[in-house]
Amino acid sequence: MGGLNAITTRDASAHRPLRGIWEQGFKSNSIREYSTRVELHVDRFIRILEQTKGKFVDCVPLVTNMTFDIMADLSFGTDYGMQAGTGDPSYMGYLHDYLCALSVTGSLRTLCDFMTVLPYDKATAEYRKQGEKLLDGRIAMGKSRPDIFTHLLGEDIETGKKLTYSELNANAQLLIVAGSDTTSTVLSNVFRELSLHPDVQEKLYQEIHAAAEAGPFDCQNTKNLPYLQAVIDETLRLWPPVPAGAQAQTGPAGATIAGRFVPPLTAVRVHHLALMSDDRYFPQGERFWPERWTESREDGVKDVRAFIPFSFGTHVCVGKHLAYNELRLTVARVSQKFKIELGPNYDDQQYRKACKDYFTIMIGSVEARFVPRI
Ligand code: HEM
Image 1 (spheres, rainbow, N blue to C red):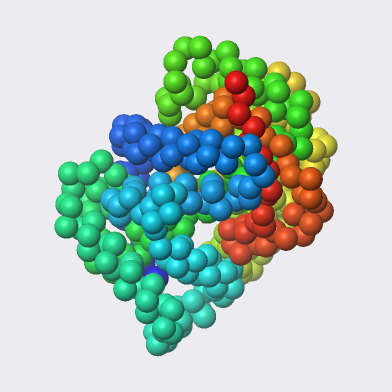
Image 2: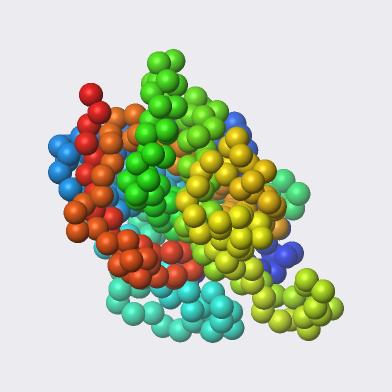
């Protein structure tokens, strides 16, 4: 991807100023400013579901198009048009291929550094050309637009660091990669779990139906719906978009982890999915059971510190609150309008087998119908 971006920069002193720049874009007042953009794309998604007229569709590409459009809007200031059918799918396709490569290079850091000096192939050249066109268009708009890129154009308060052109490019693209496939796999899995658990779907509908009487849903008024939050957190626990977590390294003095000494400069990682489905922290760890996050919490959550879908520490996901806004709004609006049912040929074993861990999880298709609730 060219220059340094926040997630691949593992050297703490180089990461700190980058992170300082990113954090400006995720303060609560900034996130509030993005809400109207998010709401616009979610509205379009609902209209697309309405147009399916209760027929079976693969909901995964529909959701992916929406989350991609949201991130393209907030990073490159463009209506990319994946939902409208006018966007070029090759750019998104390349980003997915890039993620597959990241699953290898993310573990072999030296290879990753070496690859940046290798000549690149035709597909990469085309992708870079498209990326730079988007970037130049956004830079020309300057700092007046209320989006995340405006903050990437700013500087780190502590050090005064500003991003160079190639760093802007790398970080704007990180925004799309980190922010679109993650939320999209969670949403598809929420729809899948709701269909597999009609009792949960009905209970969620009751909460949503009652709340809808106060007015149309937006990013603010979906924040305090406990069962909605529980359904989302339970899906994040069982279907974390980064199941194996990010690779880290012990420092020059090594580290003592769970009572064992791990030598200096050794690759280590905490596997998010293994931790979050462990019965010691979440009894009946493999069961989809949103109630564990609500009234019977003390039975279902033994140690909340083990809930780490957004990771932890200096690289903890900077987009967490924006992601929750998108997830809550989309699930609330879909649940209010539709009853979700899986297709007659849906096979959960097959679905699980088709999932691939390419740093972020890649899922197969989820054939479902969205039947309007009148
Ligand atoms: C459900 C949605 C999401 C999940 C589960 C998630 C999870 C994660 C995880 C596990 C990491 C890796 C942290 C590490 O290296 O230890 C990460 C990093 C990151 N995420 Fe997210 N993410 C989500 C959505 C988003 C969104 C919507 C954005 C942007 C708008 C975003 C931006 C980032 C960035 C920039 C980083 C790199 C942070 C750094 O290294 O300093 N993420 N995320």
